[in-house]
Length: 430
Image (cartoon, rainbow, N blue to C red):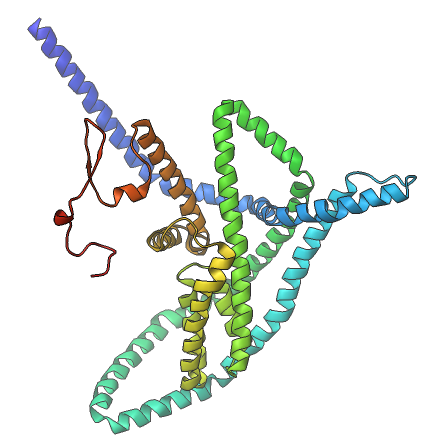
């Protein structure tokens, strides 16, 4: 019996060792082929990019289209039917008109932005390029006058500029000149990507028309699919989760777009009032980058300040002061009024979500990372509260501030004695 027991024990160990080795091999090959898997998924998404654009456009236009249909076209058609009963007006006409108006408004907004902003931005960039020699000459003169008055600084600056010159010469000879051969290829590739983007947007608009017109049919198929794979109770929870995600994303995106548009307009007016150069270009930069939470104001202010610094350092100082005041107004007045008093998480998690999702997905991660993290944070909070409720433990966070421990027998929450509290508690003033 002992030998049989030993053999069975050894056999169990052998099976466990084999399973561990096999899992390790599969894990290794999984990591090895992970890049190919991501490339395949990326290629698949690039193929479907027009449909993705269509989903995004239809998602953004859905609220305005519903307003046009319910508030304007349906009452209008009802009145026409009452006044002219002989006219055969289809019930779907209100939907057709609402979708058409929503798409036309979108095209007009895009066209107006391109028509008003692009030419002036192009003129500003052309002016910067044309005046760049005078900018560098004035900067060189200012530095030269400074170094004449301070010989010690001149000695160190000469060494630094000598090292920079050698580095630039090496970079030009080893990187720039060989790279000039591929310049034509890069330009061709850039033109291709621009045309591809235009193609995706155009096809996306066409796809969005089909989605908006048949939104009830798409919703019906979605509900049918959900109830085919989930129980009614689970499907209801999934639908509630999707509704919360939709409310969070739509509220954040529309609020941020409106907030950034207002900041861009105020910035343009302020730049004109201060007589700052490149007012429209700077307003566009500040408004667009303001879409990104937390880091947006800094991302937009730095290049704008450098542009003004090339023209006049005093103007640059006034611009920095103006941007600080503008961002304070946005952060304390305009932003909270549009986005609400709170997005549900504190500043630490906002910063964390931007860094995490920005590192994973770039610009779109920085833009959509906050609402995505709000959804994840809320889901985790719901799971934690459900577990606490199941164990008959309070869920109110305020009760845990002074908590020392929960008595395992009575379930009573025992607070920290005042004499046991540290003198300098985190988050409190000394």
